Amino acid sequence: MAHLRIGSRGSKLALWQAEHIAALLEKQGHTTAIEIIKTTGDKITDVALAQVGTKGMFTKEIEEALRDGHIDLAVHSLKDLPTEIDPAFALAAIPAREDPRDAFISQRHGRFDDLPQGAVVGTSSLRRQAQLQALRPDLKFVPLRGNIDTRLRKLALGDFAAIILAAAGLRRLGLDAEIRAYFPPEVMCPAVGQGALAVETRASDAATQEAVAFLDHAATRNAVLCERALLRRLGGGCQVPIGAYAICSDSGLTLRAIVAPPGGGTVLTAGQNGKAAEPLGIAVAEALLAQGAQQILDAVYNSGAAVPEQP
Image (cartoon, rainbow, N blue to C red; front, side, top):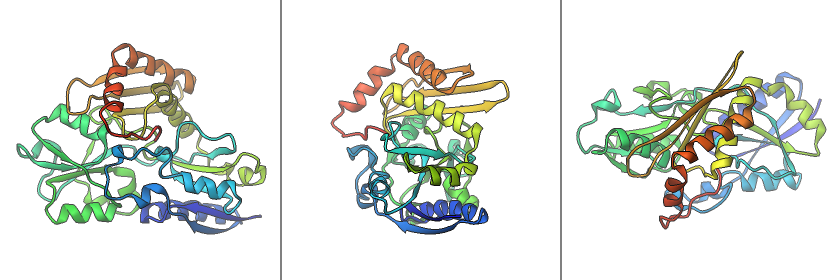
């Protein structure tokens, strides 16, 4: 059995994720220690994510610690991990996915449709904003940064009529009661990899890869690799309005994806079934490009905001 040093961001949610993986490793007889590493994304809290032009803004410093041998493995929210991984690293395990949906949180309104004309909604995700603005162009969307507690506190102070968060983070922290409603994936297509975790190791570290292999969930891996192949083909980043959600079943994979114009408008949608993850992701991306997705993405990249190259 090994002593495994786990790298993690320091937020409450990131630590829950790292401690969850640590507990599973300890059940296998390993000992663990969690090393908290502050990332670029943690240091920049007063700027909307779409204005921060840093690739791997929530993973870069953790990967540096992994490369230097200060930690043995890293635990990430998979949607934060760039689709192009440095060959020095391996995506050693993708555990079973938590709920991938987005959640509606409000103190005064039970559903998104109940929001009054002109209500203020907090979200820093162009993906969420663009899809919801297509449904409700009357609403005002305002950037919302910070950890989950900070965002909930801003809601409680009355800064927003509602906020939109990933259901997975709320559920992991035992905050299910804050959720007033879930957005079905066909109404709000989730972010690539939303709800999934990534366990990253050095590519050369066969012993650690073997130690974490039991964590890997084949159906989740297939689904998120399909989504990531689509994102990689579109060249999108974490704040570009791209959504993708794949479901793995006995008959194969089903992938649905969207590209949504910022500020509202017609949301481009494509979906297909397939057997192999990467070819399916690329095929659905090509279908979106054929509908005009490139023009939407170009408009985002040329809008004057620096957008992260990858999620």
